Image: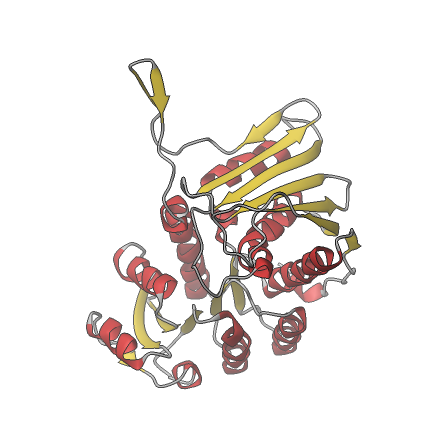
Length: 338
């Protein structure tokens, strides 16, 4: 079966996903697109075979030629389009965030539960990254003993010079680690503290960069996340789990370490596209395969909801400068089935 995909939002990541769906992966055809910039949508459609341009996301979702929906539009629009896809009974892959508030995420969860069918997958691609999977395997098989703590670093060379706020360091960047550690340890985050180190002079005057985010897991595992978004030298993602008898860490570089002339060097990725290109490939292929088989896979709407709950808690901890406990939420049985 070829899954006929409609893409809502054809900006940078939307175009990248269209490229992988049409040139890298198997089992999918992009048959419809829409964007707030109609000319851009038309330009993308012109480069595809038999692709329709729709005026709105709602119109695209209602197209009988669309089997499944890929939402890569601006975050505040996600709720509307995911809810519409659920109402239409169509599988939907939504890039993070699932929605911009935990209340909106909960409305999506409630709608999916009411539909009686798993339809939503959230784009937390780090779960599909081979280095992270290797670290998780070492945690799960007991080779490093019981996990005690985890060190994470999320470093960007820069952020846009306008419009990026301190709060977005949590909601747009650290949100990946928030989902990652729930998956890594198979348990929930129960409290958080946010610390403000000395400010990077490369950041804008109104941006508190970097931040240190402390996440307390239910078992007592403590996770520290350094988020530095104007560090200039490259896109550097780090992670190390410290156990009772050993550690497991992401490899320093995916390429070769070259030693010559009394020195050694390796490549630092320039961007998220370079660092996680393979994870995105595996993630979307997994989604296409699940849609074709009538099943479900990957991070769920419930995972998206809990990420928003923890993110909101981190924002409160940032605001008041104190430790804040995460409100508990009971997982619906719907998300434990299968």
